[in-house]
Image 1 (cartoon, helix red, strand yellow):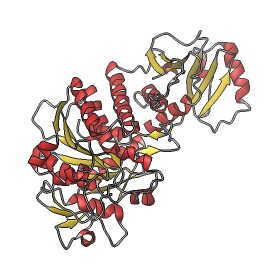
Image 2 (cartoon, one colour; image 1 turned 30 degrees about the vertical axis):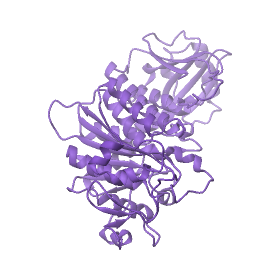
Image 3 (cartoon, one colour; image 1 turned 180 degrees about the vertical axis):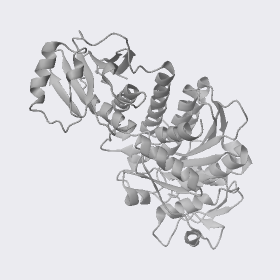
Image 4 (cartoon, helix red, strand yellow; image 1 turned 60 degrees about the vertical axis):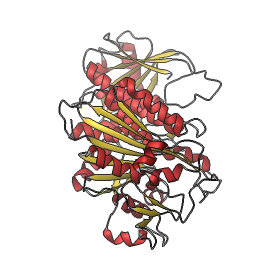
Length: 485
């Protein structure tokens, strides 16, 4: 990273570098006398008379070395708004030269705890870049120094934000890697390296999976020269033996569609078909780094869907880990096969308090919700409401979609217990979720998040600059913080 945040205690009165100050929504600067010189105050006061005070960030160039940024704090501001302000400020940072910026926390007048922390969090999230394969990296180091004696972040709060950033960035890194680098073999190794943070990692390879009877998952990867894996990550942060919270992720490292081959145009985007698993991995690292006081387990199925000589064929019938049989009518409806075995395994082995699975599962959810909401399907109203509330707080929004027994007829098979697609057409996301629900065998509260429209952004968003978003890490962390810690 080219961005470094430092915490200091000095004031901003004599700072000659770039300075961020917070004011109320009317841009009242009378309270800044202690923070800038009288000449700077007078200069800004004159310019404010002709400024657009409806904006939330105003920029005043004092001289060639110093610019003062005034950030407006509205009365009804939310933490997500503060993060977005930080991201907006990031757009003014000049990375072309080594420079320093100072954020004065003494000027914050808000009842929101850790206001400056959320502002800095927004800056950090927006600063992410994936450029490890570029031969020329010429960005200079930029320092952001937090000054002031008030509104200081405790060391625990600093760790909380840092852990969340590391978890989100790990998820983004994993999604951004090309398929020839992050294939299932390599992915399993990278997850195994997280042991150093205190996670207990178990890797089930093809031999173990075959012995367990995970034929739905194995069938997806059998056309690839790479291995197929189920990897579990356990975090035991509670002082009791309480049931863990379970998170399950689809990890199709590259999806060609298999024998049901995808069109060539935009197939390169299928490197992000493992984004659900990346969210789970990023979340588990976050929980371990910040020493979350809960028990949690992350389970990811890692495969590569290729049209090889041993690839699964349309018309094949496989027996899943649950014992239920599936007729494969389309090998490009593969994510649900991976999740089917992973969900049943998670429920049976860990007996969790709830299960949340994440997957870039259907193009239909993008038709429904675009890139504004992820689709939420669930058998439990309480869990659904908790997820929606958490998503709204961190601006990673969810929209609940229907599940109903009447959809079952669309995936009934004449030759097996079910088929993996709805041949009639329509309700593509719902029938996929209805399929997954069949593998929750013991009425465990369960939610399925279809994040196909949210995991990757070609144009960038409020807190990312385009590419992998890391969607879901912050949402699930907020779910845990607000309801289970």
